Image 1 (cartoon, rainbow, N blue to C red):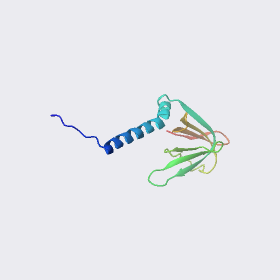
Image 2: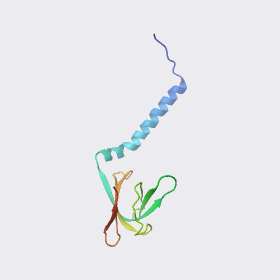
Image 3: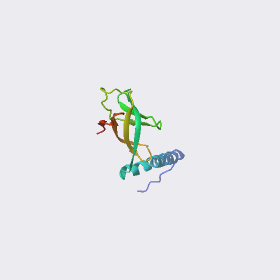
Image 4: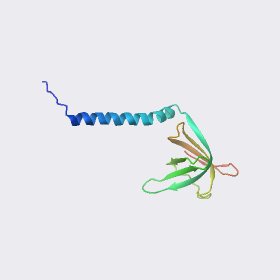
Length: 120
């Protein structure tokens, strides 16, 4: 049996809009995905402060780089209770080459450069 299907303007509009949005999503994430697959990372070093944001259900650590005023977010929260959170640290953050996604961090004491904690 053969059944003719009618294509309405609304169905064509929905299909073209979903194709456009999926193409846009691919263009936005493809460069970072390329860096993550090839494990082509960049290490950002410098003095930073760490702020813990625990609003809502999830918590995250926000690293403020002082020399470049960049901000990086990590879900893995460092345990810095004995050192304090508002004091400056020396941080080495591993990010993708385009600085869009965070991979890991290492936190050092700002004076002695002794490793305090690193991400898992």
